[in-house]
Amino acid sequence: MTWGRRAWRLVEAARALDVLLTRRGEARAILVDCRTPMNYAMVAPVHAALAADTRVRVYVTSTESPARIREIYRAAPPETIRITPRQAACLRFDAYLAADLLWAKLPRGTRRIQMFHGVGGKFSHDYDSPSSSMRRWDQLWFVNRRRMRNFIASGAIDAGSPAARLIGMPKVDCLVQGTLNRDEILTGLRLDPERPTVLYAPTWTRTSSLNVMGIDVIDALLARSWNVVVKLHDRSWDPRPFYSGGIDWPARLRHLLAGRAGRVAIGADICPYLAAADAMITDHSSAGFEYLLLDRPLVRIHLPELLRTTHTSPEYVSLLAEASTSVETAEAAVDAVDAGLADPMERSAARRAVAEELFYRPGTATARALDELYRLIELAPPERLTHGSRAARGAPVLA
Image (cartoon, rainbow, N blue to C red; front, side):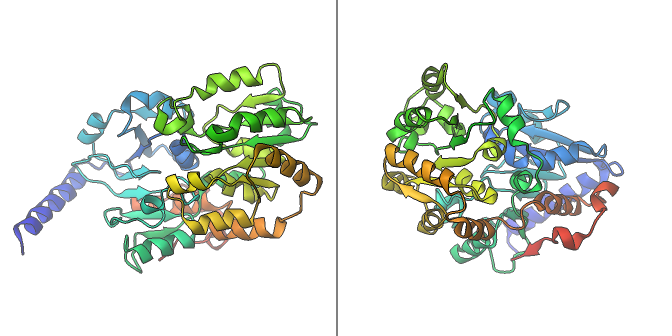
């Protein structure tokens, strides 16, 4: 046995002893690590359920942006415990939950879970077909079988890996459960629910449709008798050129929308705005795929330079194209929305097929995630989570 292997076994033994000496009954501690508010939106349904369990204490941190921790977790429950990465390094956690490729330094060890934060296929060499190993994660909560297969094919994990779990996307459960009320959401935005509502949700980067033609798209939408909701990607709020093209988009859009039937969505979770929209325009974003779960008209602005600079996998470009109307100009995008509103069932079969391909059993993902998490932290789930058939929820599936 090599010296390195002996040293690692000593570390594992010390960590096991730490658990034995410090674990008190059923008390458990979980650390959530997020880069942006959008990352937290992915974790939020799981966190909300854990917050109701008095045996579980949830801490949150931001390994990458500790100074922004209050902004990142602004939608978290009031009792959420916010800590710095340095404080986290001193504590012992039973599980670590991340929705991005973050890795907090936790010397006392933990069980690490990767949730992912989208299905768009952008930066595929990191998120969909990784060029580096993902074997350090104790569990990978896959949103669909496609990504699981891609991880195996790229060599990021082994076929049959017990770390690979088919969970789905907890964030979008609400889209198919009927818990979001369109009219209430629009009223909250001070928009007329009687008018058709169009959501424009471009992705980020300087090559996104927001930078290329966004003002023209929004202006043309506002010229029609529609409500217009603009949902910026988290990164488009960042004034640095790499993220937003160096443009203060919130300020520019507030000026453009002033006194008109349009709003800039400020919530990090796009699901309420998806539910409120009768049609949607995007370029290439995970949100566009998520909207397919509602089976409503989707318009895709095709930008080859965006797809190239974001290393978007061709398979996801094809999937989004199948389920949407593709255009290349602002005028064509608005005309496509008009056609979609006139015949909302056009492309319905394709939308449903792509949604089924990319979202494993939507509406039940949170239940599967909680089942798996409680098993991992060696704690019986609360009685409220054990009601109903596990078969109905679908037990986690290994690769």
